[in-house]
Length: 435
Ligand SMILES: NC(=O)c1ccc[n+]([C@@H]2O[C@H](COP(=O)([O-])OP(=O)(O)OC[C@H]3O[C@@H](n4cnc5c(N)ncnc54)[C@H](O)[C@@H]3O)[C@@H](O)[C@H]2O)c1
Image 1 (cartoon, protein in one colour):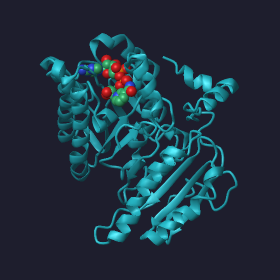
Image 2 (tube, rainbow, N blue to C red):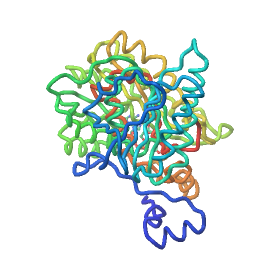
Image 3 (tube, protein in one colour):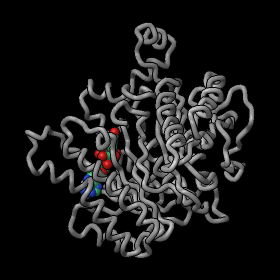
Image 4 (cartoon, rainbow, N blue to C red):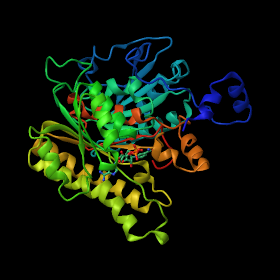
């Protein structure tokens, strides 16, 4: 279902009228395309406090510059902010340039982990979070603001590249933590095909977000396996054929599902994307047990089962990536969705608990994406009024597209993202729901 309001506000009379009425002003977002792979313009580097971060280690990949009149992006290195006095440098650095950041531009604030032994440093660093989320809400014109907590610029290179690119168009107001020291992609890997020679399995990939994920991972060089239910067989085969991959037709809740996945991938796999999901909405007072169990089974129990078996059997190779799909409903809660929100919050628990062990024991990262309102068949079925509210109630005043979730998944799946682990990344345009 097309967003007609977004189109209307893109016209001169539409802009005039909606401004006069004080209505939301969604800006058309600049997304990645082969013709426009980067945001055109400078990437300005500013510093607050005295930083020890070796950003040059992540450059020249990032191409940061010390001055610019109209930057497409600003990186503010605030890792050296240790107290309220140096926190003032954040204001000093950004206040003069924030107006000049181009439409659909980026502000990325770099912060340090909170120091448990220094509450002044912790206060000042936590302050960056409130700052980032507030600036994200007020900056407008399709511009985004995110905070990356890091200790090692080299380890954060894939994350900074992603956040500074058009691929992160629908991510704003988020805090991402990047751990220390994992090496980047192996030498000789083509930068625009980071997943070459890798196999990715995407569940629920016959349509919607899953199809976009399969397409984006294939663009990045992966051989994709498109898994979906027998009712969606035709679509699954069509997607697989278009992407030069293969289809695997099965219900992930079937008792033999994991065995069949393992049998279809005798050489193992590198990227496992748990995307299949269903909703069966009803308020708890009216919810039969079957609605509860079917949602929990597809969205959570099958994810736990497949992850356990494929991880412990070694089917997911070292350097592998698991990306699961949560939802902002799982973070904020939603009336009529006790079953769905429980299942998606369960994904968050799974990711946070398993991530450190999976990396230590198997060399595999585990992260989640948490989509907000994304334009798909699932959301097209939502009643008009609620759909409109879902689209506008975020800092970018529009719904996201499946490709926004797909690009986020591709960044997490990147061999260079080995230091991004245990994260739940919201792809929600900074929805007003939840944190
Ligand atoms: N669309 C949104 O706004 C939104 C928001 C938050 C989270 N999500 C989550 O993103 C994921 C994809 O959502 P979508 O909007 O593309 O949904 P969709 O309904 O368009 O697609 C889901 C796909 O999963 C498949 N599937 C369902 N049950 C399955 C099973 N048992 N075995 C194998 N495949 C199965 C379906 O056949 C379908 O192809 C879901 O996990 C959903 O909960 C979506």
